[in-house]
Each structure stands twice: as C-alpha cells, then as structure tokens.
Length: 272
Image 1 (cartoon, helix red, strand yellow):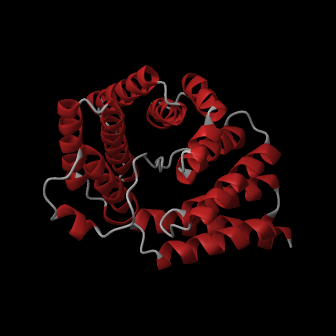
Image 2 (cartoon, rainbow, N blue to C red):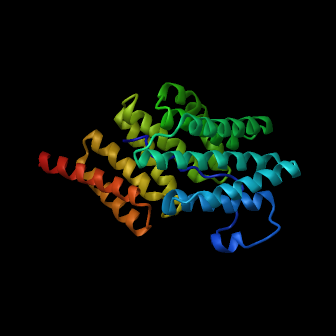
Image 3 (cartoon, rainbow, N blue to C red):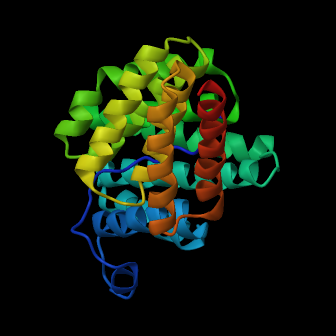
C-alpha cells in the first residue's frame, strides 16, 4: 500500500562518497565524520542488507562525541539518524508480517522528537524540516494516523526549499513523496499525487543514487495506475522492477515493484 513503505531520508553532514569498509577502519573520527559513515551505512541497510547493528553503533558513537564536544548540529543529526534506524527496523517488522511493539514505536518517536527539539533550538530550517518529517513518519507509517501526521508534514513541506538549498535533494524528495501518498490514499487528488510523486522522482534522478530511484518509480507508477494512465503505469513499474534488480535491493523491495507491475499489466490488458 502507498505510504506503508519506509521513509528514505537523507541527513546533513554528508562526507564525500566512500566505501563503508574503508570508513569503519579509520580511528579518531569526529562526530560529523561518524554521522557521514552512519548515513551511508543506513542507506545500505535500508535498501540492500537489512542489517542495522553497525548503523546504530555509528550513530550512537557520534551522539556521544557530539554531546562531549558541544556540537549541537552533529548531535541533532545523530539523534535523528538513530530515530531513522529505529524506523527502518520497525518497517522490517511490518514487512515480515509482525507488528512493532508499543515500546518500539515509543522509542522511535522519542528520538524523532528529541532531534526536532535540538534543530528548533539551533534554528536551522533544513534540519527542522527533516526532523518534522521524521515525527510525521511515526504517525503516518506506524500509527496509521494521517490526521496526526499531516501538521508535521505540512510544516516540513513549507521548509522543503531550505532542505534542497542545504544540498539534500533526497530529503526534499521524501517530503514530496509522502505528500504524494497523502493525495493518493487520503485526500484523494490523483493529479496532485502524480505531480508530487513526479517531482520526487526527478529529485532522485538528479541525485543519481541507483538504490533510491526504484521506489520513486514505483510510487509514481502506482499513482498513474490510480489516475487511469495504465500505459504510463506499466512503463514506470517496468523500469522500477529492472532498476531494483540491477541495484540488488532487498527482496521485498523488488517484490513490491513486481506485484504492482502485475496489477498494472492486468488492468491494461483488461482495458485493451
């Protein structure tokens, strides 16, 4: 279902691309360097491996160092990163048919709110936008409460330009992606859903990370299918399946795209 997929949120303080193995053998890293390593590890875990232990360790170490050094920005990134790590773990439970416990959800919510409080204290609009989005995820994805989620998402959307200006194309793409889900399944306005999801895809294609493009293709394909453009839906979902396989994504991510492609093909065949 749209909106049930994990958020795929980038964080600030990105370092130059590097391999996880080379980053994890370095010593004496700063909190910001640890955040950059943790961010890359989180992307790999969320999209390809499903293993979050190392991610949690890196963000946890970054948080400790940031607190010791008084680096509030790095602390906010580390706390938000821990919140996202909890989020992906909770999503993994949902995907496998399990339900996250109340304690699981509460732990994630506490971290998201803590990150938001720090960013608001700092007064950084891009960080605040990402943190607002993170809190919204707790309500939308885990509590299934769009009414509670949207005040956070709307505030995040209002700061989306600042997110892009900070260099985080992916963070902005996620804001538009979940707004697209809102118009697809809650306040149904299919034209607007297609517009928002199309912009989300364009941002990810500009970023160029092959791990993050398939889910945007699939989301837009679902919206086009709902809007009745079945040929376009099949095209997008075919690309999503191929891209997910090429990127060696987690099996459930590939299967999700495949399932929606089958639905679109059946609908197109019936309409022909």
